[in-house]
Length: 592
Image 1: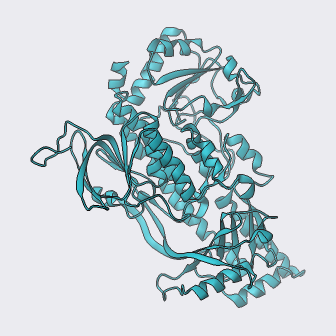
Image 2: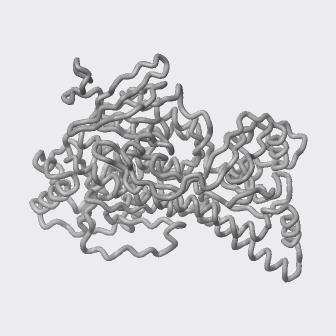
């Protein structure tokens, strides 16, 4: 809103939150805010959503977010299912002899049970052009205003809000939008990050990659060993040293990828050259291939050390810039937005002090930094494989491949080296812990003073460790409702509310919730007819007495726990109110 003289009218708002960008971060933020009843506008300079299948792996935690927001079923309907994702073949071509296979994304018999125990959700492969419409259309249906062909130009903020300047690209008209807060999800070349001067560490443009999109019916080569990624051992430049065939829509839409030297000559992208390379990767010179697009992109290794400034917040690729290795990009972006959205909603509704928003960066910056490091390390870890197969040189590669068939001692050593090199890739493709072991530290997490430092019983990157420690996501186990159907512990928390979780003996905590009568607080008593612990799995993982308590945040993370029973109803009320005050701020406690 503007005054007659053109100055900002800081007493009126066009919307509570302006979101710039409709990628996974921006679209998730808009969907969550609209779901929570917060006014939100979304601006994108494009006339529709993603037109290329960039990010695609949707891991369990990201799908848990979509489950909480009520769109899991729709996302699943447009996805490649988990059962078709897992067989990664290493071979000179799709028709050539297999050098190795790796069971990926938890589909192997030795890992499947870990993934099933870790989450109520599977993994899915959902390319961005299929995921973003699910998010944006549901956000719009719930009240978000989506503005296409709208370019973000600049903003200025004051004590009460943010005034952003936008341009309608169809008419050229420039205008302002007044919001309480601004969320910049405008990608790796973020204008908003640059405006804020957020500190960025690392390197941009570390390596180059070519992606060629094409259509070809390759079912006869892959349907019997279904996998969405295949590593083709045709010599290629770069850290990976291999070519990639990625199934976008099994088994007829594909991407072929290979590296090139940023400091060398421009890659030859003439159609005939690209077509020849694709056919070589397939191993069939006569296969019918239709190239639909050829693009180049650069490998980045950069992250922001702070995600916010005043009333402006950033997330997604704007603050963590990295290659798609390990499949963490869109998943981390979705979780950025989910972390921030409930906090914005609580502050806008007056349920929390604005200081709650100061917890966004402390919780998400370490995750972003970790993801950037992991994605780039996953590329470097191909060095072991390149040493085994000599993938950077065709003559060496042929000799190394022959050596793998040698029955002599050199062949034995080569095969042992191959096993170790492929095994190393589990850290990229079966990194269950990297995906689900996040631990938050901030003032929105109250440390359990009686708990010793967490010890990891297995590799933290490969395996999930369930815990109810504050700062960890509440463990998933199946509870049974009154009709005999299963409900995850994640299904009985979240949905925009804080949840007090206790057992049948914890009646004092349930009474405290009733006494407080807060619109954002509810209780779950494990053992009641709708939440029976029939498998006794909650008993095994809860780490508190039956009459103890967990305070679970709207994003499913444990904010506080009291291991022992309360002495009486009065103590339970006092302790719970004190915890809410610490997490949400003094003003919220006074309102209570």
